[in-house]
Length: 473
Image: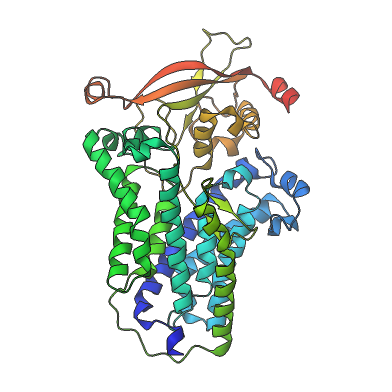
């Protein structure tokens, strides 16, 4: 069975598995701490309402059989516990079949969450974690050397992530071909990080070098993943460095981290692998069958990459086994933000005392410097960025959010950085206004201490009270 395994990747597998368990932990922690106000029984997009209209075959999930907020919490915290166990290496103490079942648990639990997550879980890194997590089930433990088929398929995912992202950029916004997208991107990205202001103020020629280097990393380097060592290691290392640069420049949830994790199996890390017996026949048959099936499913993302109408971040099957990826095919030139405010006045007027709600990650008060949250994912903050692009992105949940704010709903307020109203005194009216935001200059930063400057654009939602929200819903 020497043809089936690659013992020299023993250490690479170990690092990959522990790092993937860490990403799983952040994903389940995000779900456990945020699900109630987003999609709980009284959430903005309740799971029971979704499962009532979408059949199991279209969105397989445990929650089709039973849903309660308590059951969801049990599933999410169980996912956290299993992730910690895998992070600690429990799979290495189990027989091969037991380790595979243990890795199957977080995949099945997270699939159940993603498939009922609706808008809140419509991001490409959800499918990326599921596709990677499914392959991790078949990577084996200390009883067998890493199977070559699974190592190849992990590189195949990384190839599609990088090459698909490169293609969507070249086919999309002309600024990628002109090398000028980074003149805007650091300012208009969904959730800036603590260093994004400084990245934005880098010299224009350096921004062009960044874009050119990105094109090389995404359009040329991915092919080197399938070359002999040490070229494949060099290619994967370059991808890791690029992703670390992106980690510094913004808050992209765990997208960059899962991409780094995917690059690890392509690294030939120094190790002295222990002697292990040949892989059992049943394991060889299962791995080969799964590999052949996944390669067959891969024709759909390949056709998508070859198409001039390439789409980003789409799952072709309800289990998210093989997907297509891509990001920032277009780059906004202007940043808009929805600012949500409330008042205690019985009759709302323009000169009323309107108090602003502060979100954790999205820009609000111009003096509040962005914080680092990734790989933790602030789902409401991300969707507020989409809501500012177009009200169509917020139609399904924005009214419900306003209703919860008018009720001083404690679960919803936990998603925010600060509510301007005491718990026993909810606002009488809530409104939303659209502002244009731009980074301040070095001089403005020194004079005002503010990293943002904002300008009122228009009304986004007129003053609304509970009766008005109820009528609309």
